[in-house]
Structures are given as C-alpha cells and as structure tokens.
Amino acid sequence: MKRLIILALCLVMVVTVAACGTSSNQQASKPAESDGQKVEIKFFHRWPNEPRNTFFKEAVAEFEAQHPNVKINMDCVLNDSYKEKIRVLVSNEDLPDIFSSWSDSFAENIVSSGKVKPLDELFAQDKEWSSNILESQLGAFTFDGKLYGVPLTIDGKAFAYNTKIFEDNNIEPPKTFEEFVQILDKLKKAGYETPIIEGLSDAWAISHYIGTINQRLIDPQILEKDYNPKTGEFTDPSYVTALKAFKTLTDYMGEVATAIDHETARNMFANGEVPIIYMQFAEIKYVEDAGMKDFAFFDFPPFENGKGDPHALTGAPEGFMLSKNAPKEAEEFLKFLTSKEMAFKFTKDCGQLNAIKGAVTSENASDKSLAAYDVILNATRTVPWFDNAVNINIADAFMRGCQSMVIGEMTPEDVIKSVQQEAAKLRNSAK
Image (cartoon, rainbow, N blue to C red; front, top):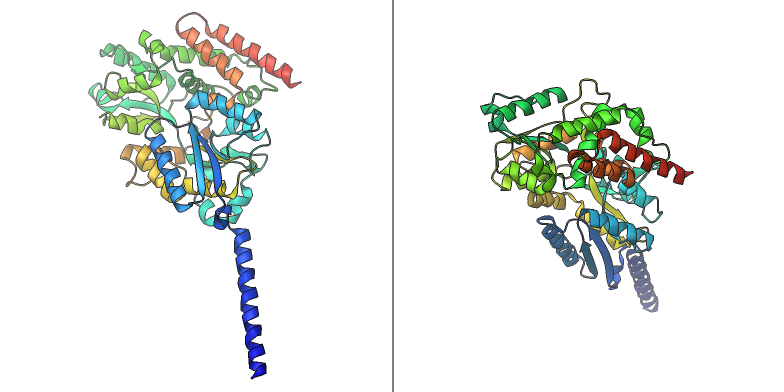
C-alpha cells in the first residue's frame, strides 16, 4: 500500500512539473497580452479621407476586440503633411510602431535611418500569411537585400477617356504620343474646348506626368544616373523635349487647369464635361460613384523616338513598415491589416486594388477595376511616382517650374536650368 501511495505522489509531481513546463513555454511564445499586460501600439497612416479613414477605424476596433489587452492609438494626416510629419518623427526618435509608407525612395529614405525593422524573419516564420502577398510588389520595399515593408495597395496611372465621346467622334485610343495630339485636335474641332484636363494647382499631379514622359522618352541609363542625387546632372537635351511634350498637353487644358486641383478635374471628367484625364486606378470608384459608366483606359502612349520601355506602367504599391523596436503585437496587427480577409474588405469598401492574392475578385471589384488589375499585373514593370523616384528638391524644381512654365513665366530651358542647379547642390552635399 505504501509503495502505491509513493507511486501516486510521483505521478502527481510529474504531471505538475509537465504542466508548469507547458505553461512557461506558451508564455514565452505568446505576445504580452497573454499574461495580462496592457500593450499600446502607435499606428500612423496617411488616409484621413473617406472611405479609407472609416476602414482603418473599423480595422483597429476589430483587432482590439480580438486582442483585449491591446490598445491602438491611431493618427492620420494627408499626403504632403504625412511626408513632413514622418520625417520629423524619424529625426525625433519617435517613429510609430506601425506606419504607412510609399514604396521606393520614400521608404528607402526612412530605412536609411536605421530605425525600421527588417521583415524577412517575420515572412519566413509565417508562410501561410506571407505567401499570399504578390511577389512582384515586394521589390519596391526591398533595400540591400532586406525586406522592410508589406504592400497593401497596388496602383497604376493611365488616361481615362469617355468611350461615348470617342465613339460619337469615331476616335480610337492612340498608339503614339503624336497620334494623341492629333486626337486632342480632333476633339477640339468637335466642340470640346478642353479635350483633356488636369488640376495643375496640385504639384504632385504634375510630377506624375513628368515621371511618365521622362520614362517613355529618355534613355534609361541617363535616368538612372540623373535620378541618383550623387551623380545627377540633368544635362541631356531630351529633358527639354520632355518638358515641351508636357507643355503641349497643358495647352489643351485651358486656363482653368491652373486654378483647380486634381479632384475638381476628376469631377469634371466624371460629369462628362471633358473627354480625357490622366487618372490613377485608385480613383475608379470615385468616378463610378459620381455616375460615370462610359469610360475606359489607355496607357500613356510611347513617343516615336522614345528610348524607354513603352509597356512600363507608372505606379507603385503602398504598404506598412514597423519601427525597429515595435512589439510583437504590432507585427500581429501588420499581418492582420494585410490578411486576405482585410484586403478583400479594403477593396470592397474603398475601391482600391490590393496586393494580396485572391483578394481582388468580381465580388469586391467592378469590371473596370478588374481590367485595371490585369493592366498592373501584366505590365513589364512598374515605375515609381516621380516625386518618390528622385530627391524631393529635384522633384520640387520640376513641379514648381512646370507650374510657372504653363502660365508662361518660364520656358522649358528655364525649368531644366533650375533643376540642374538643384542637382549641383545635391552632388556637392554628397561629397
């Protein structure tokens, strides 16, 4: 009997020790919420406008409901204000745990601070999540062989045109830039005083034109050298040719273009007032919601003597990055935002295409959005937005110079001269 009692006590001890061991291991592998600690996460994004702002508010609420011990403090400001604020936060050692980011040079500049967490290990640890992200969009967040960002949105830019107006005037989408200009002339003769429109008060809208025209027209090797702040000179004559091409298009936009922003220009197109606008695919829902159904896209046509890839698409993904010291809960929130379920909801609620496999279907995207999705996936490559492809001082010299050029205060030669001066300053500062 005594031996049986001793054996029973030993079994109890073994079970107790095993149970304690299991609990200890689980505690080590789970985030802090499992031990009751309150965890606060700083989340910063650039979409305070609707419907995106509501989407992210709902996403935060849902994640907090699933993780009761996690509190997410969300902040957001729009575009240029976001760029400025994120730079201040980087310099003040106050980078949010998780934050939205444009890709390419914008992301690279933040990464160069050494305050962003590489995500290669996170990708390797959770293949079920990471394998759903489009591989083609990861390069824009990869620097020196390391991945620093997870894309959520994908986008591209092309000319949206009113299909009814084109059909009524027996016009087909152009195959070259030179044909495009002929179409603008034809539309003007047909009574459309403003055959194409843009909101030129928005400098970023100008940068999208400049980036694409440069890409289509200029030798890629020249662009690679000049877009590097350490080597950029912008002395090739083709830059003046590119500026003249932009000026040619703006001559068809009329004086109103310099007094309005891009949103106003888009509304003019959506209302059927103008036949053509250069528009991001992310704007399709806005146009459709305004009631415009008769529209389609054609890519920026190549120049007859252009030296760039005619099938490259201007556009780039946007996504999220983590600060170097972000807690595990921020990693989980990042995976939550870029899960297939949330990406599907993002496209359904906001109308913007996403970078998650299987999360863009006929159930959450219109026929036009699906067509745009195919254009993005089938492009030979994507070209970053110009203001993200070059140093901000170079971009600003182009954008402000073009605004002055459109109203006749500068010539294309004047604009490129100011760009060359900024390039010289950058080269000198890099020595």
